[in-house]
Image (cartoon, rainbow, N blue to C red; front, top):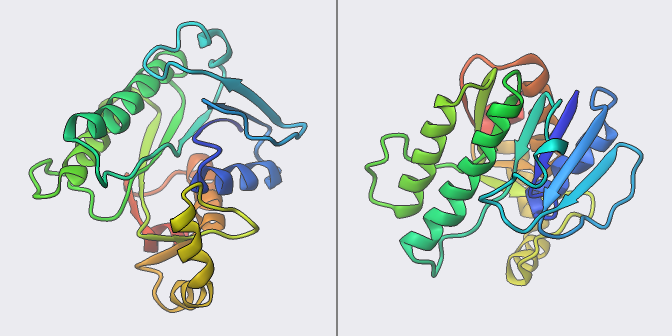
Length: 219
């Protein structure tokens, strides 16, 4: 399996990249981002790209892939509706429509979040935007598309959040998060489990297009 990965420098993306590089079924990983991952591996190639609304200059390098793991995401805290929609919906759909045209046999997996509103009518702005993003991704002519909706995610294997205060919380609560992951898989998963689940779903499929935390852990 050849994989394109967006968001490889974020917390979730770091975990997904780690699992891809370890998995024998993943032959090649192309990481596309605004900054390099800082990693070197025989499987890994990188494209540093600034304009995530226009991939025309790098399209020639984006074909021939069987899966895309889209792990880009931002918090809506302190952000205007317009800005959040741009960073969440516009950028995701620009990448996905390009990939659907270049790789119609691709499986596209999008990391969204628990509480996303599929009706697009909910009270929370972020949930409406994420819901529209999910719905429009599912309309694209991919072989299949899956929406991963994890609740809490515990970073493992030295993976860190790029947001200092968030990382401090993870460090302080690590024992509690480990316990929650064991006793409450509905509300907690790990970067390792997310990465492994993405690879398996891309390879084997899943009975439904939306996976909550318990589905991710089950896979």
